[in-house]
Image (tube, rainbow, N blue to C red; front, top):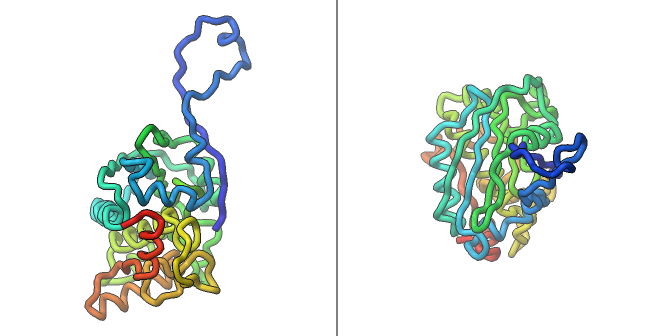
Length: 265
């Protein structure tokens, strides 16, 4: 999993009285301490899971115009968080953005967009999460090989959902909805922010896939690598629906055990 560590927030500064502050080239200090949101993926897993340090979760959903996630998926996502963490005070705020007009994205480019646009950071007892819904796919996609990326995490409180890819995958099935694919992708990627698998929440028992780092090797688990990639997810969801199950997989017992051992439910 790639990790990048850059952040920026635009400031509206009041005119200062001192001569130095008015001088060209003098940059005043940033009053916001953003260091807690610039850590590695999984580093905040325990803080997200428990209420020991932070009692509120603020989720900033930044989306390109026309690519806002469905209300159904966001409701499902919030229910997932309340099921596996002790955070019951969860606020979701939306930030509509213009398109950056890219054909595809590197994770570095996603991080640069966060630098320009993110407004929510940890503050007091509030832990902030940033989720960007992109209007272009990952640069690593290879549709001819049926390998497309639905989402990715790149810091302790940052993740991206490739919404165009999510929608393209969903319309290939008459059974699976866009909300289904959005929900599975959101839950899977946030599972990584919760430290799964061996990414901040150590595995109580060995269940990491030897062929897919930080993913679960138990069949049917939400944290299997196929959930992150389009073709595999669609096939798995169609099989679940045909078997009379809900389209979106759940965490298996081993992943739940790992979360519980790190302060989760």
